[in-house]
Amino acid sequence: MKKIIKKIIRIILSPFIFFDYLKFKKNNNRFSIKISDFYPCIKDRTIKTNFDAHYVYHTAWAARKVKEINPEKHIDISSSLYFCGMVSAFVPIDFYDYRPAKIKLSNLKSDYADLTKLPFSDKSISSLSCMHTVEHIGLGRYGDKIDPNGDLKAISELKRVLSKDGSLLFVVPIGKPKIEFNAHRIYSYEQISEYFKDLTLKEFSLITDSGDFIEDADENLAKKQKYGCGCFWFIKK
Image (cartoon, rainbow, N blue to C red):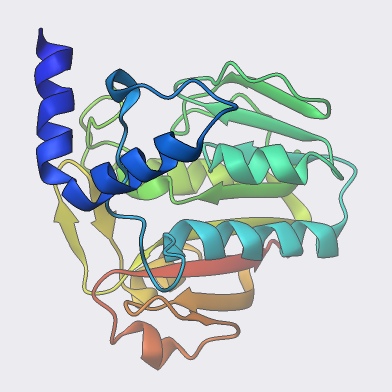
């Protein structure tokens, strides 16, 4: 009964699509088309294709960096599976997460790891990424323990396991520092610079509040954001 009511509501809220449905049905002779399968997508009639700027740009940026680094293997800690899945097409990737993913692809392994206690030896990883992840640590969003300093512990672990001359691709929200509990933290450019002062910043790129991607961005532009996305490429010297 609930499904029927939902279908009726969809029809009422989508009169123009319902007329399209009737027109299509009249001329359709190849597929089953029933009113019970009515599934209007009323938000997709846009002039341009919309996308999440943070996640499209930062994963594209990181994929290009991995290609440039060209490691024998890349280790990723809890970043986007879209990034890991696609980059594993040309570089073997070991993906670790507090909630391991049941994913099966060639060149891609998935396993458990607590970012505040990584299961790696000191200075053992030459190509490492942790993107749009650290801002969540310690807020309980993903079932992890509440810890106001969880993000700092995670950053310390990333630096610990990174090898000499190793690369770290690190991405977090950038803007005026605050916590939107229990979703995420937003960091200032200065905070990230301070947390990683013992590493060398090779590149900083920025996704702005307006959704623009700026390569080799000026730190002053980062200061003007409310919820930008900072893409940092650090080297351990």
